[in-house]
Length: 134
Image (tube, rainbow, N blue to C red; front, side, top):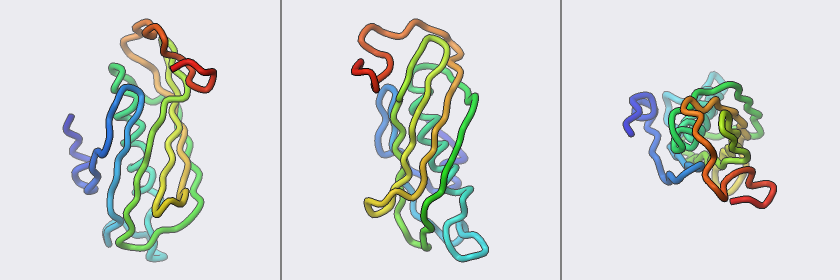
């Protein structure tokens, strides 16, 4: 699936499977803030891209809510990845946790919930991974 916004930011899809995705990119000069470190908008776009890919892997979905916490700055040239994992899936909604990591360090944490447009039943054996269903 082609995403012009991801392409404009230089983001790459590294992994995609039902309910999960990993996206990566390099912090370029155009991605910096006035302090000379990565702009929060770049990190948000990275996390949101992984969130969108993971949530739409189960059918069309649109965001209901998102939250992002930032923990550490990144310099130009840093490689950064966002990994989205489904933490809850129901007929109408799904929630994802996205960890933004660089050099094995947590840079930011994003959580998001989507409305599933198709509203299909959840396949047997799939549901809330935190409760042992997978």
